[in-house]
Length: 555
Image (cartoon, rainbow, N blue to C red; front, top):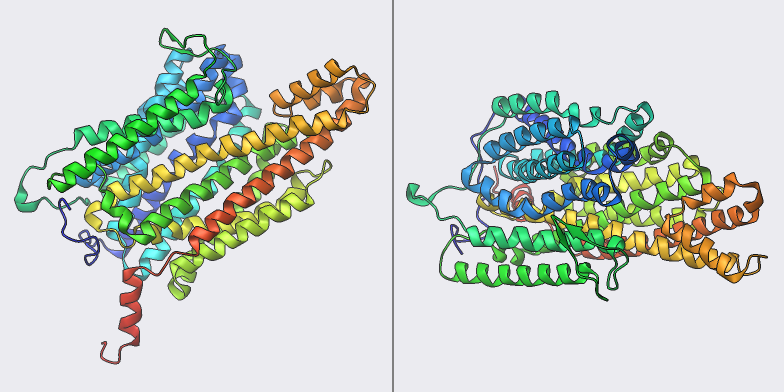
């Protein structure tokens, strides 16, 4: 294996900062993560305002939404490895600076091209920030402080994912969508100052002070392959998973008119590029050359299982955050701020349990905390599915979203801890980038998979409920198709027309069926995550700690 002789050496550590510096450094890293997560979830709520102000076309609006996640996911592994080589604090500072500059461009955007370009640059900055914070945590915090540090970091990720739409709803109501980007400038400046003041610089040691070769081929293959896979998953619903549902074009290139959507072609290309990455990295490792992604990391059981569990958790969280607002909007006509407030208990639960997770992990083990959290998530989503009806509002969702948030806070707080605990500190960056990539792929799959269940169930349920109506068959089919294609929002138009009261009632019932089916699908996916989490084991450090306390010879 290049640059290390074992995957399980004693934990390497950075120069030990004081306790106060460590705590303030943790605040800086957590705020950096918050910046990334909020901007990943805030735009969906703001998009109608942005479309109206800038006159975006449908295609431009879609690119403004998806390009951030696409670039972010594609570059996590390369920039995670870059942090190992050039310094993780340096990568964090560069990422925050670029993110803030791109945010200024988005805030001042006069049109679609500037906005989309700024969002892409935000994704580049975010892909520098996320693995830099996680790998610094992994390298700096050890012992009992480690669980608490990961607890804060993880609860910020899960909590801020829910608060992003809340902030977006407030800004959408007030009409000031540009502030969603402009606020990142002072925040970014504060983060840069805090990082330079309170974070130690950590990097992978260079053997003999020699200049290390950079795996450029691996970096390009990782970026293009993962980018293609994520784009295909995100855009499958838009352009069709197999047959084309609408024309596709970008940069002057138009996809040829045929019976095939661009999505399967891009997914196949992504698969080929990822396979090529595996071949190239194995060959370089066998030759003793540095690699972008050390595949031997996947021989570590907790790292391998932790990545799978991370992806499945994000399928559940992002799937729910996608479907439940659509249900509320379709049935109750709730405005953006009220939709966001309905999701608020999730964030509250995540923050509450995330802060407690570190103490629980030190008593029970981080792997047990993950397992408890996953069990709570499954129970909450099943309960939500069993109690949801056409009359359920935000208040009815609140208890189950709070329980789900409590479970999510426990899981997110300690899963990264468990996954990275046995990874050598010198490889923290690439391991952190891989773990963050698993989360991003899970998020994209969650919206695609749960969204598909929701839309398909909605169309079928509406067709069944209109079967006995006085409408002609072609009219029934048109109403059901319109409800499905609008993701349920067509229900508000039916409610607004006194002559379609029966159809509006059928739409409400259909939305409840679709939301229940989506919740049950989410619960099934989370149950798979629970099965994966049950295979997690105490880390090597945990075993050492137990031996120290149990041995009568320990001092």
